[in-house]
Length: 458
Image (cartoon, rainbow, N blue to C red):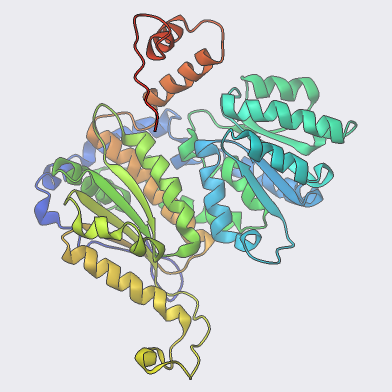
């Protein structure tokens, strides 16, 4: 990964510990198989997150929204959960952090990615409806958490703005089917489509993440440009074993699968770019939901430097030797304020230095400590912490996740276990059908089938 600045973007494999990963030569030999699978899936329209066939049309839509629609609003209330929210939150925290700082007077993004009743009521009681755009994100159009919020927020808008409520809604959903598509057709609500075969956790570089980015004034074009620079080679018709073997996403996938085969069951993502901390949460969902299948996978553990040096790093350094680490840092950060000249003598080593020097020093110290504790470590060092680099990183991690899943022999774009929980929740709420789920619920809660509760007071 390279970029046109004085600092390159690099993957540092120095401490990856290949010598402890005996499966890696065989895995590298599967490059031809993986290249053929990629070519077939792309040609079949099954990997839009890599091929980005929707991007030109979306860019035109975003430009029009920026010109005539988004400037009308001061607040965006995003209704979405999981992949419909995590990418947008990571982008907001990284590139529009002003709303988290004192004295913010600009645009604000509020994300409702849970079903806490008091939080929803607080937002609806404090947000000015006339200045708020509600962005509803659900590919299926019937995600119960999001649709439940939508019913209440729609009523809030109708009460506050009886003649203009629908102009304050923007729906991102399937182009042809689902409840939200029905709502759009019935009321003439603005929509943007979620492309076919684009799962939520792979959708940040689509309208899902780019609409909030455009609303907040981010350089979404640079974000998309960076993503495409890494993803495009994987979607080219001429992809073969030789080309895939040198792509960083395949090398990452080989490393990740070889780690699993060697018993490394946890993958730490340690971000030493503080404003990028939420990207660790974004990656956690991407990795866990994609690869936790058939008793396989490695548990992703999000961490941010330097905060987690003082919380969980003791476990990383001196706990079970089952951990590897993806260490993300930047080549150069802000200089920061200079330290004052009249500090106590015991801190004289800070004389003449600036506050911004602490973070890279602590990053180096933590990286060295992890390596000395025999934690296999891959360092992603970015030339800058800008939108283009974020796009490149997201493409790298998305493609690596996909390829890791294929090397594992599982489907990295479904989530069958999650679907079971959704069906059980609907059964608990009384949805029609779902006979097996309702029977299982009755037995589990001790209401039928001879179940016995074992509950004890604290």
